[in-house]
Length: 615
Image (cartoon, one colour):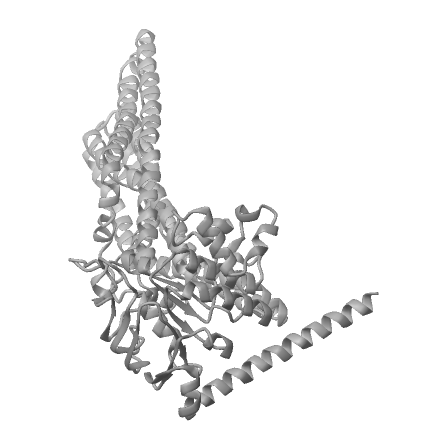
């Protein structure tokens, strides 16, 4: 059973035709070439069906009468028809191969844009492997179906219908027998759709789960190695792979079932028609040429009939892929730009929380308010430290400022304007964030630092790096143009965090939100960064989540978060003197710093012992 969160899946599915029709807006520009490809393929099928008619004339004419002079013209006609069929097949390939890639590209771009637009709450629920499988595997399948599956499915069905007309025109008795014998195929095709669609969906979901497992293992490889849990993760992966293998076998059995009927029914039909044809020819009801033409036509139809099986399975796989694609495209997005956005004419940086409430929600549960009536005002140019016990909601407060999540009650205003009345682009231009978990991209140091303000000058870049104490970048192999690797894991945690801080500083926002941006730094580097930050914070409104007493010292005032509310605001000295809970929080932070220092000293001693032992 797939372990994917059931909340990401729809409770019901539309019909196959309705599902497939949804991709028409993406395929509209390609439809002309696809139709031309269908026409070319259909003409190729008709040409192939004309060849038996020539053979009928040949058998009943010159071969029967012995007139050899009429044989060569018939052979020439067959040759011409064969060449024409080959040209039409080549034309079909020419018309349909390119449009499929364009449709795939448009759908992939639309999917990526949608993923960028959807709120963080969506990405909290969806495993990344599921999204990756939709962006790669599912869209590849849709491209192959557009370029190959839909063309042959429609053309082969039409070819079968036209072929049946030819068969009936040759001998209505044998034609009726042929049609009646094909009825079980259509019945089984309907049963096959109901069975195969369910299995195909399960297979594609399990493939997404497997991709998630691989991605998690790669990203967490250091943890797995550190704890010696590679074998455990391998066993877990093997179980998921075995589930997928079982589902693929179930798919193969379903496909084998329809292939059994697709091979058996035509063979039985041929046998019955052969017996009936010989009897009709013997009694003079049909000629030898008509008998040859009938079976030659039936032979031409054999491939279209047999192809229906894998074309149907491909179509149902594609229908599932389209459903999975639109599950993302149809996902609700509550965090959107306003219809009539406002602008801040003269930004000053006054940030105000007005009776703010927030709770996490998903489709399965509704949590209690984590932020429950928070009121707080940051004046322009003021630095406010936000402190509280672990789990009090400090990081959540910072996420609300840039609408990574939307408040569920109350409001947040920037210079008197509700942030929900600003476009997300404008809001995030005025407010920049640096997270505790510093995420970098597989790009150069320069591109990572200037992500929020690509137009910044070299002087701005240099200043941001200096403030974040990131001079180490100049010692990298290619300096600022060095690619930092996936998620910046080629750098240490402290280096990543400093680059993330430089990125926030380089954006030159009116409001700077720092979610414990110095947690991975040693004490000496932290002191240097704090000293440099004072210059920036002198003219910038700042909200800093503090997990160290030294970070609190950067602030003009401190806000104490307790029970989802700000219960006290004042200077560090004032709160130490008057608030018992604040003293307890600061004491907890000091204990944590002491533990970190002791751990660092132990690691340094271990490193020294190893070096001495190596000597």
